[in-house]
Length: 363
Ligand code: KG4
Ligand code: ZN
Image (cartoon, rainbow, N blue to C red):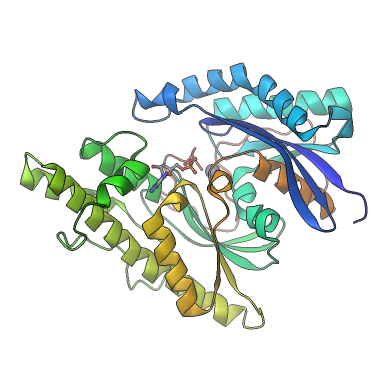
């Protein structure tokens, strides 16, 4: 590919409104302008994302954010080669806002539109940040998803494992809520755990030893609730110990589940010189989890790739990049009639599991 591509990306699938311009040339990718507006404050009073509030907030902010991203990139719409907008999975109101805006820009400028799967954005980010080659494994751990995905190529994914009930971020959020910690729960649990004793509670490690590569976290949440109830009233020390023990159970679960995935990758792709595991999603911010995955990768001879945090959580640079990858791979753009999809698995062959990604919407 000789000419550099400049892609405008739009992301509105959950509670972040984001726009970005990314460049892709023969040397790789570069972010030219990237803006993310978090709606955390709008939702925190409700202890979770309120879809209607999210959609309205996207409408209010998106146009300005797109202008800002173009400005930071030092380009105008004329310099853009294609528009990439998240069209699923996610909260339908937000998806409509972003996709319709993308369509309007595509129509007005005559440029092609790519309707991007949000999960594909997460899956391909490591090629933007670290220039990874296919195939590689990705662990996506966010508020709505917990999936182990084999990334074989652009548009070519195999889901090796998924949660059969709660997503990992959801388990953190629910644990925080029942311990009276603030939303979002992940950072609060991680903070509390620092002062805690990880050995005090022996919480369950669901599916450890199971031959499949799936995950389950709802039993862990129940065990946390029972522990907290048995101690009523809980002290700060109890909370710290519960959080530390909760994180320890998760580390052990991931070690087993992801460890099996790494082994399978080595068996199936013995010829890959430098196998890699990529982590993505908001839970990837967790230091205990990162240390566990790094150790696991060292043990199995894998390169561990954790993109910078602002690119692990929801952003539009990953959507622009996915559009650039699709364009560069010669995949056709989408019709302006394309519809947003609140559910849209990356691996369309994978069996739908009851409960998996129940919040469904979030990625
Ligand atoms: O990917 P993300 O920003 O948003 C979506 O889910 O779409 O992920 C948010 C999730 C929340 O459940 C939050 O509690 C969790 O990521 N999270 C963390 C940490 N920071 C965010 N979980 C554990 N430890 C953290 N430090
Ligand atoms: Zn996401």
